[in-house]
Image (cartoon, rainbow, N blue to C red; front, side, top):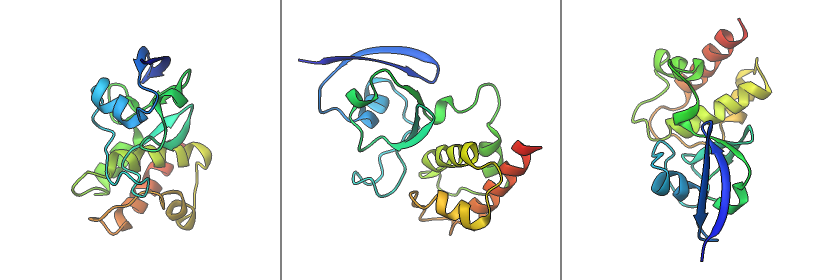
Length: 155
């Protein structure tokens, strides 16, 4: 027997009946087809599953779908409309991605970081993305991308 929930996902209203134990990441990927949100570790350590819930970055692999009832969710698919979000563009321009697996969660984290702190220092950037693991880049170009995005967004 499912529990009815209602959410706004990337600006679209969604009403679903879900199992009480269904994780938000599985609702997004398996039921809504939003596969940009990744499942990396299943232990909330990697950050690949990060989405915005009511404007705050959360790890969707540790949140039940029923806990998001009534909320406003933004996934990587909903970050931008017709063109790239400045954070996405900065990651591209600054080579802040390699394999790309961590990139959706990383971008969502950075969008949240820059919403809270439009001009972060390098230390604040590194602290802001510490919940996101990247095994390819060494983080140097990711930090550079965040600095670039911050400059563009504050101009």
